[in-house]
Amino acid sequence: ARAQGVGLRSGDGIITGVSLASGQGLTLMISTLLLGGPLGLLDPVDHRAALVTLAMPEFRFWWASPHFAGALGRCRLTMPARAPDVCLVSSPIPRAVFDAFRDRFGVPLRQAYSSTETGPIAAESAPAAEVRHGTVGLPLPGVEVRVGPHPATPLRQGDTGRIWVRSRWQMAGYGFPPQVERPGDVDGWCPTRDLGRFDPDRRLVLAGRMDDCIRTRDGRLVDLAVVARSLREIGGVRDAAVVPFQGPWGSSFGAVLECDSSNDVAELQCDKVKLPPWAWPRKFAVVRSLPRLPNGKLDRRSCQALLAGA
Image (cartoon, rainbow, N blue to C red; front, side, top):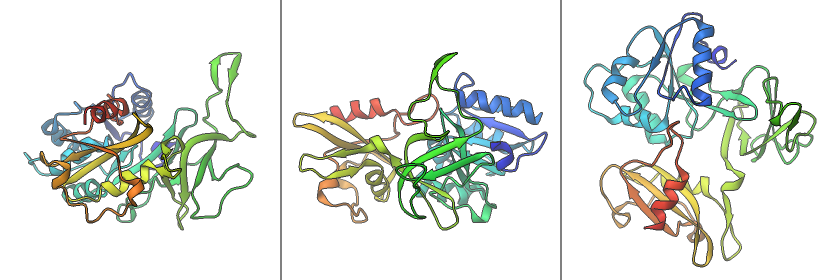
C-alpha cells in the first residue's frame, strides 16, 4: 500500500540502511520482493558509499533516517549529488535538514507515519514541487484516520487531538492466539499515543506524543515536542531532543542539542526561540550527533543519561 501510495512501479529498486531484522527492514524487503527490483543495503554511517548508491538509476526509493539525510545534506561531495525520486523518512526532521537536502539533491524528503499496531498510516505522495515540510501526507488507501478524544466525535480541521486509526492491516492484538487483546479498541478504531491535526489540504500533521507532555512544579503543562521544534530554530542547532527526567524536586525535562561545532549553550543564538520561561528546558547537553537506535530513531535513554551528567 505504501509503495503504491508513493508511486513505485514494478521493477523499481529500494535502498535502506535499516537492519532487515527490524520490522521496518522486513517490510522493505517484502516490498522489494513484490516489486521485483533490486534491494540496496547501506551502512548507516558511510556517506561516500551512500552517495554512490543513491545515484544508481535502478533505485527509485530510499528509506532514509533523519540524521543520515542531514549528514548527506552537508557532507563534502565526492561525486555529483543525485538521489532517488522518492526519499521517505519516518521521523520529524528539522527544517534546515529538509531545505539543505532539497537544495543539494533537488529531491524533497517526504515524511511517512506508521505504528506497530496499525502498520502504514500515511505518506507524503504529492508531486515533488508540492511536498511541504512538517506533514506526513494523506492517509494511504485502505486507512481511515480521525483526530479527537473519541472516533465518534472528531475535532474540526486544524484542531489538535488524539489520532485514531482504522486499517485493513491492523494487528489482531497482543498475546498468543486465540487469546489476543486489542487494548483501547473502539468499533475497530485503534487509539494511538500520538497527537495530530489535519491541515486545509487534509494532510496529517503530527504534533507530538501524549506521553511527551509533562506538568511542571507550578502546574503548567509543557508539550516537549513543541519545545524541541522551537529549539531547532536556534542558529547553529541541527537537531534537538527534549526528554523528561527525574530531578531532586520531581519530574523535569531537558534538551540535548546537536550542533555544528563544540559550542556551549551560552554561545548559541537564542533570539529566535519563542518559549515562555516555564517551558525553557532545565538542563542542556550539547553533542555533535544525537544518540540513535539501530533503526535510526532517537535513543531517549541515552539522552536522559547525557542530561544526568549535564
